[in-house]
Length: 335
Image 1 (cartoon, rainbow, N blue to C red):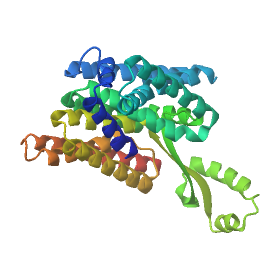
Image 2 (cartoon, rainbow, N blue to C red):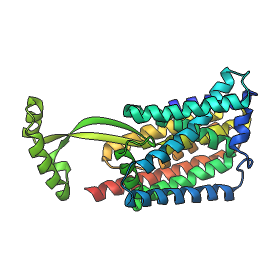
Image 3 (tube, rainbow, N blue to C red):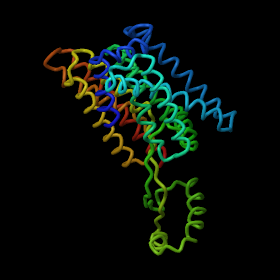
Image 4 (cartoon, rainbow, N blue to C red):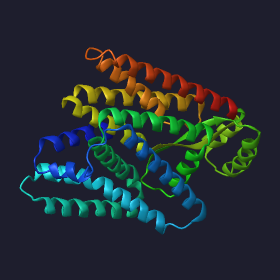
C-alpha cells in the first residue's frame, strides 16, 4: 500500500508541477505506448531478460556482476522518484540540477543498501515505485491492462508449470538483492506435513535442533512438531505492475476515484494471495490474483460510466478461478 498510494501521489506531481515535466518527456521519449504490439514487444523483452538472468545465475557464481546489475536497476528506477520529489519541493532548480541531485541520491541509496543489508525491503519499495511510475506514465490504460493480463498468464505458467520463477526467486533471495520484499517468521510445522523426500531432511534437521537446550523447542519436538524458519518473498514486479495500472488509469480523467479503486483491488488481491499461501503453504504467483481483483474493482468503478466494465469484472473472475484451480492442484501434487 505504501508503493501504491505513494506512487500514485508522486505520479500526480508529475502532471501538476511544471519543473518535473522533464520527467514525463525523458521517460517516454518515444511517445506513449498505446498499441497492443508495443505491449507484446515489452513482454518479449521481459522474457528475454528473465531467461538471460537465469542463464547467468547458472553459469556465474560470483557477486560482482549481480551487484552491478542490481545497482543499475535501483539507480535507474529510483532516479525518477527522487527527481519528481526534488522538482516539486524545489521548483526553482533547473533540470540539470534536479537530475544531478537525483542521480547522486540514487547512487547513495545503492551504497547504503550494500552496507546495511537490512534496508533491502526499503530500497525495493523505492525501486518498485520508480518502475510503476515510469511505466504508468509511458503506457496508455488499455495497453497497461493488456500487459498485466499477459504477465499474469506468464506468472501462472512460470510458477505452477515450468517453475523457473521459483528458481529465480531463490537465487535473488540468497543474494539479498533488492528485487524482492521478504518477511521472515518462525512457524511450528507438524511432522505429518512433510512428504517422504522431505521427511529425511526433517529427521536430519530434527537431530540438529534437538541440540538446542531451549525447553520450549524440546517440548515441541517431543510433541512431534518442529519450529522452522518461514519466509514469504514478494517480487518488485508484483508491486510495480499494479502501480503502473493505477497511474495509467489516473490519466483517464485525472481524478483519484478510478486509480484508488485499482489500488483497493490490488490490496484485496494481495490479502487473498496471502490467505491462499497460508492455507496451502506453497509458492504462488501474485500477479494473477492481483489482476483479478483489480479487474473486478475497475469493473465496479466504471459500471456507471460504461457497460463494457462488465467485461473487466468477468475477465477478473475467470483469472481468479484459474488461479485458485492452479493453487489447489499444486497443493495436491505437493501432498
